[in-house]
Image 1 (cartoon, rainbow, N blue to C red):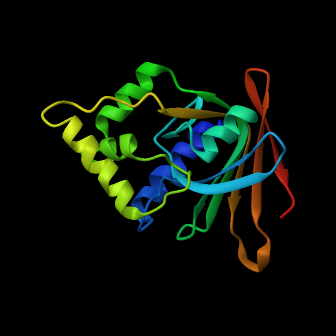
Image 2: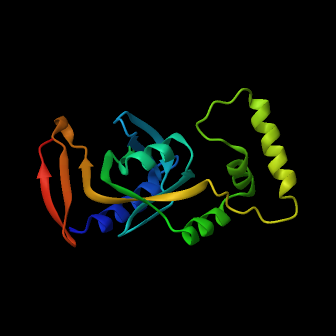
Length: 192
């Protein structure tokens, strides 16, 4: 049995990608603003390695504003078909510009244009206004590559706590906890 939580995560993710019918990289992201008011939403995991878990967004969105005020966050992966979940807690740091540019370049062109058109999480008078802004972005970049907007980037959740949860009959679940300890991890179990 592996004793590196990043290796376990990678193995579980491969298994989820084989059986989950929709978005095996979907994860709940929980943030809190400077006053401690929590907020959770689903985002997609776009990268994972021993440095942490990466997602991308409009940095002026509610999640971006929360992270600017409070750099702690939690992630939850729930793979119902496998009857498993993984909880991650840690500090969040921005990815570097090169990493953000490289990922943005892989997005579908319509998604790239949408990043320019959207004031994510802010009030929108009508859908027609957003569609007009999208059309303006499309015209602006016609015939050229769409650059990454300055308000769009990525974040890395650098974990200090990772829990692996396996469903068991009669609610006698297995909970395996890893807590960052210096350069390594301390492992233990939790009661179900």
